[in-house]
Length: 228
Image 1 (spheres, rainbow, N blue to C red):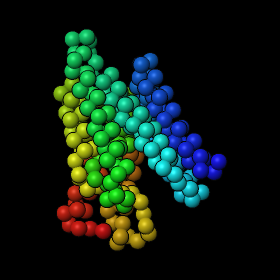
Image 2: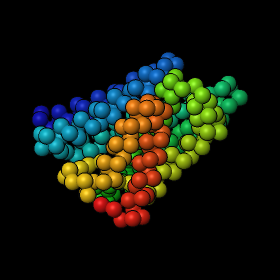
Image 3: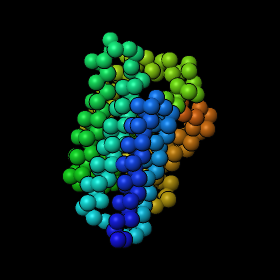
């Protein structure tokens, strides 16, 4: 029974994604975006609880990927498809949104068998992509001027292709796991966290896409200059 406790949180992630999909079909993109955040919280807690209880199982790893596929693969695809919708004449182009789901599936399957990604990532993690997409309805509500630029059809299509590529290419990205609190060993992480906090304080949801690209930029700096 103890081994199943983390799996309950993983299922919470899955259910969050399912509820988010239902919210999209009811026209509530704001709540759908929040369900990505709630799913992400469950995704964090299941790993934390597993480490706390010192339990792990093969089924837990597989269940985690299945839950992530729904919340961080299918749900963001449906959100961006809804944002792209502007009448029946655009219907064929809407299905480009599912490239995100396809790339997320490939990314999750590869992560499960890639032993190189225990302390860092190769390619954008699916939660980062989902948070990026989930921020768009929130930005639309908070900052209409910025959203007019971000949510144009060419911008949305560009996002689909760029984010899909970032998930599948072997781009080295640092992990936010701290092995110690040393400033020297974690300088990039501290810079990222501080900059992200300041961006969120000053520009709120509009900061989220900037934070994602800051993460990628700092990862490249870390790789090029061989920083710890």
